[in-house]
Length: 252
Image (cartoon, rainbow, N blue to C red; front, top):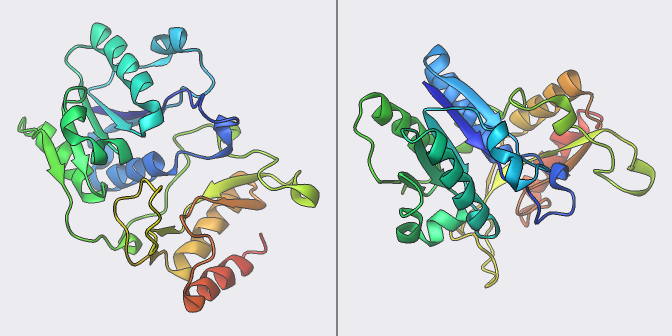
């Protein structure tokens, strides 16, 4: 079965390639580990492509996966409309902040949606597609231990879309770098934040952090990191010390 994520143009960002799509890469890695050769996995990167030309870059898949934020929903709806004209039997499955905030509206666009964190849901969704019993809505209510899942492999993107200079500034501006995500969640309650799932922060273990950085150094020559965490420096000094020690061991 052919399964893949479709990324948008990223035109709302000044530099669309500055931040890697770590969520989709993470979920593709989980699907690869769970299903192996039963799935043909892909990531279609439409960043920087004119919307009128996007359909020429989109392969035929059995299941299209979408990570949806509100600034992107209108573009995603147009992309899906174009895909349905050529591949009407394909399934469109979506998660992300917009879907979590507007689930009923989202079901008008997508065949099925994920409410909550996606690690276990995406595996169950694929099993249900195999068994021809896809549900409209999947919900994850239990808190997930992020340390039981593999680090996100970047093999679904070319190196040129993963590593760039200018990730950092000033004297470090010329270092080849990439973005990383070592934790999930935020204990604060800012009224402007789109994150509905506030509470205790979950952090990758220091061993996992060091392992991911060494992978990025070895495979991609990375020497600089851009954090995508809600908190790069955590309120808990013990957590922050563990992360910083893990990074320090890699000489990044």
